[in-house]
Amino acid sequence: MTRLKLYTAIYVVLFVSATVQVLVEQAGMAYWTALGIIVALSFAKAVVVAAYYQHLRWEPRSVTGLVALGLLAALALTVAATYSIT
Image (cartoon, rainbow, N blue to C red; front, side, top):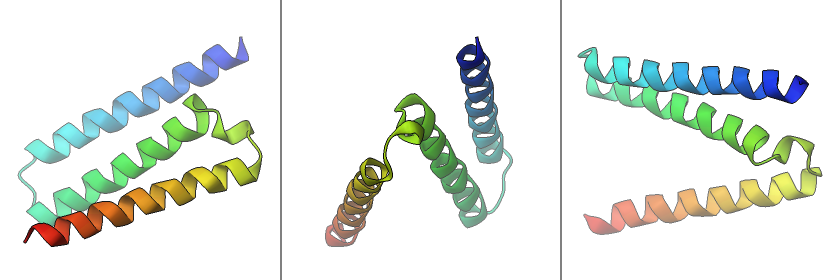
């Protein structure tokens, strides 16, 4: 029963943050401000999903570090691809 409450709370947090992202997009803010807020919320959602739905919270730290290393590599490749287009 505890897991059901935890997963329901996580679902609500993810739903609310996705709703906030849509509201930020439609609010008419400055582009870079809105982009920063949306990226920060997306990062927080990714951490929550990885920690709880992919069970990294209960894995040994070495597995979590390996996933973080892969994430950094993917981010580096994305940044490099972005700059190679121009």
